[in-house]
Amino acid sequence: MYKLIDGKAHSARIRGEIKARVEQYKKARGSDIGLAVVLVGSDPASQVYVRNKIRACEECGIKSFANYLPETARQKDVEELVKSLAEDENIHGILVQLPLPAHLDEKAILDLIPVEKDVDGFCEENIGRLCMNRDCLVACTPNGVMQMLKAEGTEIKGKNAVVIGRSNIVGKPMAMLLLNADATVTVCHSKTANLKEICRNADILVAAIGRAKFVTADMVKDGAVVVDVGINRNSDGKLCGDVDFDAVRDKCSYITPVPGGVGPMTITMLLYNTVCAAERS
Ligand code: NDP
Image (tube, rainbow, N blue to C red):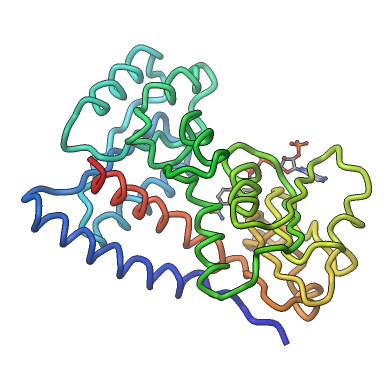
């Protein structure tokens, strides 16, 4: 019988801890913890994400500073905004909502976020520190996965972990975190040969692909821990992950659902990183 990893419950528990730390910070320093969010353009999905992040900040007592720029914003406008947020002592974390409109140079903009305010954990220095297993701000989605695995008491050390996906924001940092936790890690991608066989060897299988029902029952080892990062829509428009949940679940020891698994943890880890950044400031 599999155990469902309840991302909402883990998220609620961690948010409780975050609230307490925010209160403590305010008492000790007599000031707020601030997170600045930058949204350029009017992409509907990005607007929803930003709204959710701002609401989550409010719920935990973190002050949010929303900065909206039009789709037509010039590189210079965005860079100047990020530079001013970088210098602002009331801002402890800066988040630039991606994707940016195509005419903007994303890297040049992200490079302006100081490492200590990089609460998304995307900057080169934070990723480098993660690779070296040093203290850093870790990308929110993979960090959320690790927090859930650890809290569930799943064994990571010495296990075979397979991550499908090698993006800089999910797959790669996920692989690094598992490696740092002493798993033996294989990273798969669209050019991987024998993907099914590799997956069948996984004690821990993380799917971060972006394709509905990609992971089928014949790819999963009996007793595996399966983590589904994917967010897709099926043909009925319903939210679903990368794993064929109904077919796979009975083979698993643990599995995350979509929705209600990894998703709720991502914003929670953003709040967590913001509090860490403020406490270190
Ligand atoms: P990307 O598109 O950046 O990366 C997808 C990865 O999947 C790539 O490495 C790609 O390989 C690999 N891939 C694609 N097709 C195949 C295939 N047929 N076989 C093997 N590998 C394949 O996506 P992200 O990493 O940003 O996101 C992954 C998923 O997670 C998406 O559904 C996204 O919506 C979701 N997501 C969920 C979050 C949450 O909070 N739950 C947060 C962030 C993302 P290659 O590199 O060779 O192209």
